[in-house]
Length: 210
Image (cartoon, rainbow, N blue to C red):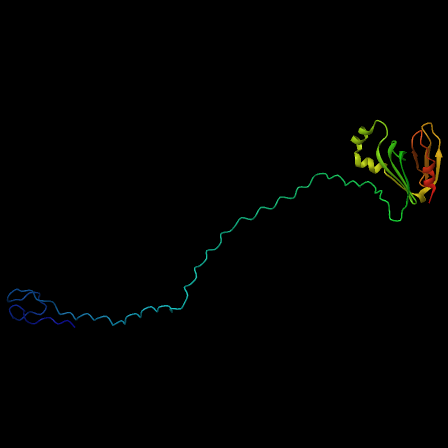
């Protein structure tokens, strides 16, 4: 509620209500009194933040997410040759078997069913006739070896003949010396000779022996 003063504060004269100056002395009249502003309500102080327990371990650091890695390049395929030659079989084995008995051995010339005359070792047992080629007879040794190779030449000229496959063995006369001729069950013929001087009678006799 506003209350205007009734008397001048300077001279004490009565004041005209609503006047701004005193009519007696001309002093300015103070304005109506204003009520004091209300004080803001009392706010309690905020409580202090609670401290963490002394035995609590510190929080672990947050690990950074791994950066994405580019995909690994595929491994190159293993090298494979465009052509692999087939494996060549080894020469037949001329080993004497446990139940065999060697009747005799000779150095002979052999005319196999296929190929040229060959020089080698002839072994006759009670069960088989074995021929192990050593070299080619004549002057074509180096040419033959360079064309087909030593291993292929050995496979071609090695002979293993079971005596049950021999139909007949005989001595055949020749101007180059007698030859032992074997007639086989498959129709093939094999000839052995020991030159002009040495005979082949004992070779035929050993082949016929069982």
